[in-house]
Amino acid sequence: MEGGIPRAAAEELDAADPLAGFRDRFVITDPELIYLDGNSLGRLPAATPDRLREVVEEGWGEGLVRSWQGWIDWGARLGDRLAEHVLGARPGEVVISDSTSVNLYKLAGAALDAAPGRGTVLMDAEDFPTDRYILQGLTAQRGLRLRRLASGLDGGLDLDVLRSALDQDVALVVLSLVSYRSGALLDMAKVNELARAAGARVLWDLSHAAGAVPVDLAATGAELAVGCTYKYLNGGPGSPAFLYVREESQAELRQPVWGWFGQREQFRMGPDYDPVPGIERFLVSTPPLLSLAAIDPALALVEEAGMARIRAKGLLLGRLVDDLADAWLAPLGFRPASPRPPERRGSHVSLYHRDAWRICQTLAADAKVVCDYRVPDRLRIGPSPLYTRFTEIWDALARLRQVAAGRAYASRPTGLARVT
Ligand SMILES: *Cc1c(COP(=O)(O)O)cnc(C)c1O
Image (cartoon, rainbow, N blue to C red; front, side, top):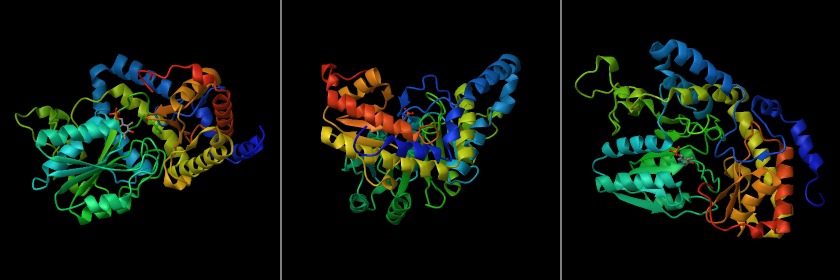
């Protein structure tokens, strides 16, 4: 294709890619399909089906209830691995449980209960919907004030806006490290420092960050965090989420869902709730074992590749998206809807186009490119460094250019699907 960057440049990047071999460790049934939605649901690791078969047939089928002896602490063991390789936390500070929404509720509730004299929660007005709804519910239930900070759809939250909203009434600040729509990346250390100076806690949502950007919860002084395992961590649809509570804060915080998995000497079945002092006090109930099991082989791939190499490739993939978008797509009504350069965002990139939804549908139906659409008019392109090739980015943007130029998308319905 004429103009911009020759395909050979993408081929060279693939040839020099130290992570290129990881693509074969995923199930790829249709090599022509370009999958750029790893930020919504990561691909299936090739080792996962066998691992699940083993857990189902041996653990469940043969072992039956006896298998719980080994299963009982999988959430904590996987949490320790995630802490070490992905989150920059210490052993005993991360555990896998429940969903991101539920973990957000638990940790935000714990933080609010620990700050009885303060009445305000701050959040980004453009944060992911579940975060907004959970915090609306929590603050309404407790008669607190939720302040939604205005932030840029494309550029993310300006820290000056946060700085001027922080006062002695703020109990909690809830923010996503990487914005789900624009990919804007916040400065975790800086936010933690600003909040601490005002006596407020920070709860981070790492859903679009974990497995995409290196996170160092310990070094940045983070206290609370939650996030998904089914996006860049490839744990599978609905795989349980993680939560992090800094060790020094664990005994002091008590979460609002008092389940038996947080209980001291759980199987003594004592009369009153008396949670363990450690991270497991933030657990509630029996884990979804099969989904938990799927996180193990997925995490092994991230551990082997290492977050530094994953980020390095993510930046190069992002730069290629930027360069091709400028060369090919800007003349067709697209404009960047993410911060630049790629160092200022997570792994995904958004592009504005007034017909983004119809273009997105046409790309999937006619051109075998799966990316996603986010309201109101954004096309979200989510390369995942473990399995996305540079040539796939080149091919996907060439197909996108063709779809946008051909205007075949104009015949598609404008009404949104049940899932976008
Ligand atoms: C994906 C995502 C979630 C998902 O929450 P679930 O409870 O798993 O449905 C939550 N928050 C953010 C910021 C996300 O990106």
